[in-house]
Image (tube, rainbow over all chains, first blue to last red; front, side, top):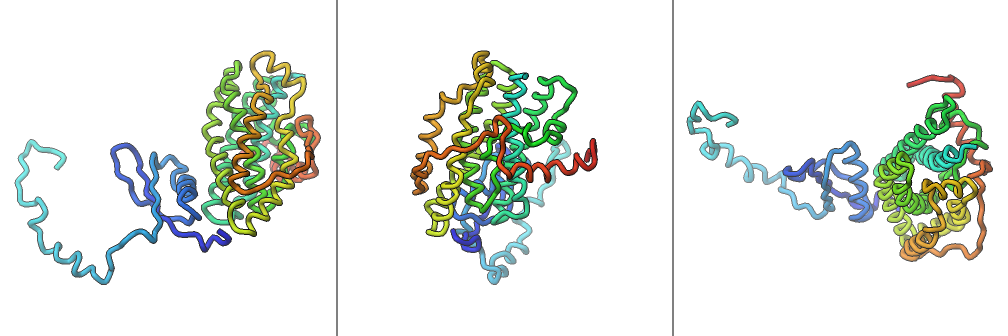
Length: 96
Length: 249
């Protein structure tokens, strides 16, 4: 750990409260997993933002390729029937 | 002399002076993440000092408030250990200083939270959660620096060689302590000296660091005799209140 720029990058996920899922909040550098958790605690939860933290080394994330985005995401745009918008909601139903 | 007042000052001055030292890292941390960690710990310590000073002001009952106690005493009136006023040095120096202090402070607060003095017990209980984290953080770093590269090992070993002599003062006791121990308010520091030594040794062993063989012991801060470093620290810390008395911001 001679130099900070040798430290791997970590993605940080914080659970805001019970019942919510962990949400990506940002990234940071740390020499290992334990210090990544501690750094995440100091950088991302110092104003009571969370009750649980996950960190994962950014190298270990597998992401979709932006070049594939046409093939990946466009086909769903023309399929409006996948959204439940063809139902009449009865008057008495709220929060829909 | 009001023994309880004196006793509280010894606790709060350790927090205040170490908090001020760590604040000097603000904007100078080795990496952004650690810069934030150091200043978080600094703020925790200054927060703890505020609670202790507020109570000390009540105990003294002489019209001084927490700010006056923190900012308007002269150096000989500060009762912190000489360890916490030592300069930041490099990151390894700061972490060894922090580790030697945190290990003591955690064991001390664990006992103080059962003090017969309810106010002290309450502040101790609240501070303890923060201090447990501080100790975890400083221990992790001592281990990583010691068991890191040859460069980090040699430098942090050197930090330990210099700072080791100041740890014994943490266990200083005199008639102030005796009186408060008798009342069930103060803590007999000898009751956890072995636990402290064992814990510190276990971390140093994991860090592949060796404590100096000498038995040098230094520091009489508890009776107001400080190293040359405290005056400089106070000059900076007190500047605003000395130059613009009673200013608030």
